[in-house]
Length: 474
Image (cartoon, one colour):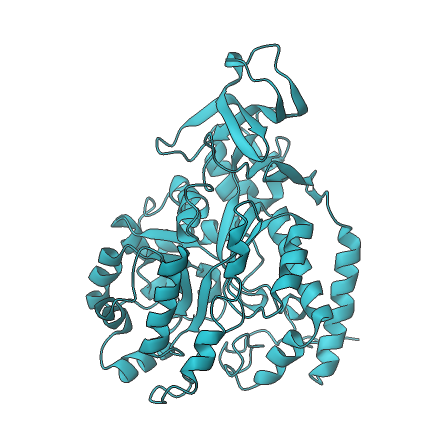
């Protein structure tokens, strides 16, 4: 086969395609032109007359579709670990949902959202972190009111982003029997980013997002689902993060929430709900029959001892064909913006929960991180696998890490051993945005320094000091 006139050629690669046949091509190549994959195959089939503007020799390293993070909060990155360790998420943690948490309350949200400087520093740091960890696309789960600024920062780093706009709610989640506060106002704040979808080649697109977790009336839920249907995008919200919000829903609705949402027509294939750590037996069938996706954020549950890895049904639903993807959540809700680490923890918790070493295997969580993620954000026709005609979003791993040897099982090596340490090159839309594990687009040290500077500003606004911890600091 002759590959000519292409922009980029990746050769001598161990290609994990994630196509429908799950082909793994040893000593393979990928041809890219105008941001689209034009060829995938064995290196021996390339004509010696190949003409490519840029050639990358992977030296046998694993190459795979970029990871897709299906639950991210871009803001609040500048106050990562500004809270004391060991506090509860709903009592002392720096909250991201405004009225959640009693320590800082609405003050944090206002401090972040009212300042473009704070937002810009946080978004750039978050996007850079994702890119360097092999994430090429993410779904923002709400809270960003500066859409144009966010898009500018995301495009500067070079990854893809799906924006949902500011938090949208019309019920106080702390009062399960409250009546809608302002349905019209909530609806007017939905879908503010959908105009970005008029450009099919845009790196940043819009979806329909509401806050969820007991903060939406039936009318708001149905309006969100209708808007998503009309615009051909996904409808995204938080759901059943912990026992408390699930029980609040039970009280408010008079039955389990996922049963109720299915019955009133909210659930569907274009729905992606985040967390869903609490699923009761009668909710299993509605979830499965709806064809909805779930963004599993294992560390976001484990960090605050919510119990999702123990009582959650992510594994059981996945085994029954449910589309389970992975998400990292927010800076104070995860270890890092690293989908590969979420995959590793998801696998371990599934095995520990079931006491079965094959509950999930490396290939399962690779699916969750790639093709399942693409489906969860409504882009499985263009992302999630390395196939001709799809967008050229891919990760090239390093081939010289001690933990990657011997090269007996490269897929397991990436998930279990090297993880994000082995990310060398990241390509999005055919453009090299990370090379040698560093950004090719921005001054990383400038972003790091700005983050430190902004974090001090945020703490001053909130009249807070950095956490001291239990040890004596001098």
